[in-house]
Length: 101
Image (cartoon, rainbow, N blue to C red; front, side, top):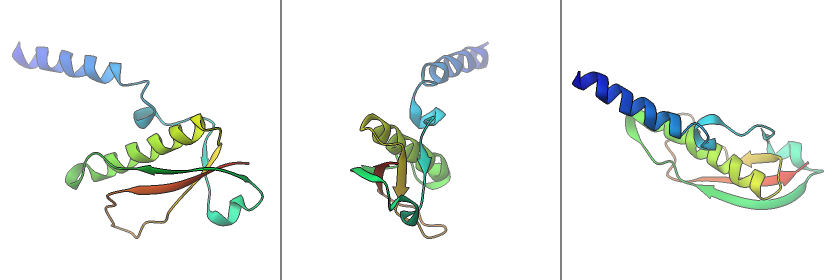
């Protein structure tokens, strides 16, 4: 019974988070390389920090990237260029530049 209660509480918590763009992504936004935005209008620079590291690093990075995309969209952008990361690198801060293309 106790595990069923914990499962129900966990499901309720996750259900409340489904509208969070960090979890669900940002429709209408695209990621591009710096070479692809030459004809686009600069909107803003964005910085985002992953909230978790170690075993959950990939999820934390995905969440931070989605949050940056949401921030860019709120600023009027539709395209984001993230600074490149070396394979296996665990960044403590993401930097992205938002553009309207």
